[in-house]
Length: 251
Figure (cartoon, rainbow, N blue to C red):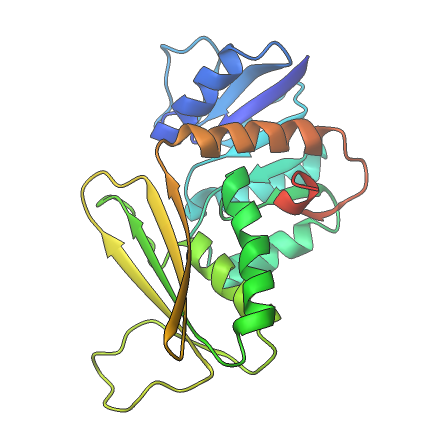
């Protein structure tokens, strides 16, 4: 049985991961990391990764970018693989993740949903066929408590489109301050925040007299937690250091 640590165990996603693990005979939550601590759980909770001295096969992180440095130090020192499901990292933090992956296996994805990662492949195909003559716009919608905008998933989708469209691109996040027509190289990204929307991502390919849309709607957070658990099972069996993503699970 794989021993899993949940980083951010007191948060909503951490508790969903805990619930899934409780019903999965292949995994066991052996500890949790959370700055608030907690004494009423069925596993020990540490306010810092450095306090943990037991055995673990992988860490699933649904916390905040502020926890990254401690997790990377812990993972590097103990050679315990990481599943990073947190979004909102700075470019400097992204570079830190890349450096750490030279020493230990790290699974990193802005979205752990299997459906979203299939959507990425559809976007790449559509952009490669339509991208040269169609305008690409991305609209993402999330709950009112989400602090980063645009979402990491929206940026991941935009990157997939840019990679495949066959021409130079530029991400545009707002248009209210400009007074000119849309440039061909623009990929527009719009963020909506409100209510309890779990997550919606819509990609619009707008051409001459024709529009094609690809959309993914998350109806619960469980799909992200389930993807993270599957990622932990995968990364726990990886011996070679490196940066891994959902493409390894959707093959």
